[in-house]
Length: 514
Image (cartoon, rainbow, N blue to C red; front, side, top):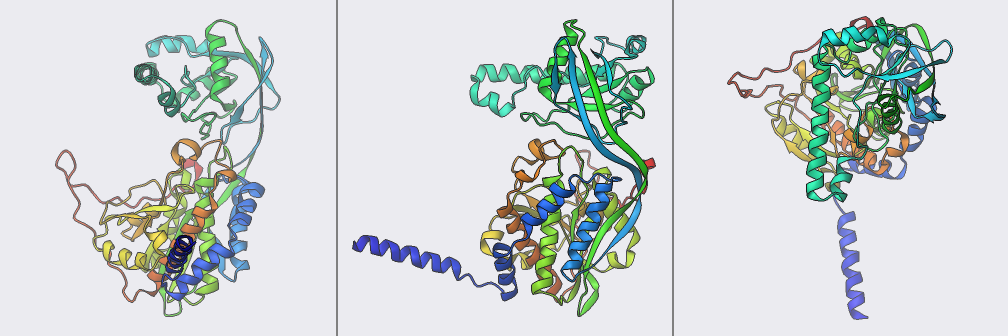
């Protein structure tokens, strides 16, 4: 009994020690609110289930802009939509693809973004690309594509992930299958090169030749997970078929079974749409012309819901602004949240903000951007700013131990040249930092895929990131110093040339430039 009592005392003392971590009272209020009164799940339902994916140029993207602005206003935060361009208007409808010969089966398919609709269902024979080795041979075949639906993507002989093959195969079999897979990928790339086309010009050539439609299968290597990007056709449907059904069609066509499918893709071409960023502002009380910016892109591809790319970043920044307004309503510096549009087409929203707001850019203390999934933040780089170690270190020190102990830092690091919106600011010489998340299968499973849905969000991880982001914003606002923008001495590349700092780029203001 005494041993049990002693063990209980140790447990109690340990728990008390953990609970007695001395945090700044404001930071402690962030922790309490994030953990005990989170609004993340409700907002995720409203943004992801009710509004859905947020492709630039769609009514859903405008709905998301209005939703986020209204949310900010409901918390007493000034908010508005800032236009940075226009985009071709389009709205996704239903996709129905059915095998009708030699047997009947409904196929798992998704029309690509901006795909032309079928006025009525199209039924046609499915054929594969010809087994030729030159552009002359391919161009000679092209007229036979007329009236056919072309399977344009690489055939995947094995539809199992590398991880599963490695788990179950003998080492010898694993090496054999991996070598075969690598060779098949190389052979297909060589084939496309030899026939003189690429992923943009080949659909154009097939459409010009009179094809009835184009099917691809952009498999990620994860079970039943395909990526959905944009169509390259103007008048015929272009759609993605999941690996299993695509492979079946391919084998049927290759064996001479002359399979036929029926395609009904419904979508709407709409008038040119205005493209906006959602901007929220908590005015600074002492240094209103200096700024801390919370950054995430609001738009997404639309194969699923855009949950982890970048619903999670958007939710994190919204929740952070809610908590800051509640517990830090009079910041020293102005705090801005920027929820950017058209990131997926080249960081257009954040580049537009940088170009259109030079006075703000001149006074930015720091930018904190989050855009790679649902995981807890585990990496922060100094992005090439020479003194970033000092001020990022000061700000991180205020975060709870369980949050900051997860984070690996790299100073001064290298400037981000692209990939996400912090790069738009870094290119302009502004300290912009990516709050990089733990993987959670992001790049293979959810990034731009048909599986990027609400259920992939781990809300406890997002709460961690809200606490971190609120703490960094608070500390950056309170810092008595305006941080240095001095850049590191850039290293040399493999050829001995000095690596250049990324150049600021103009946004694409219109889909005509895309």
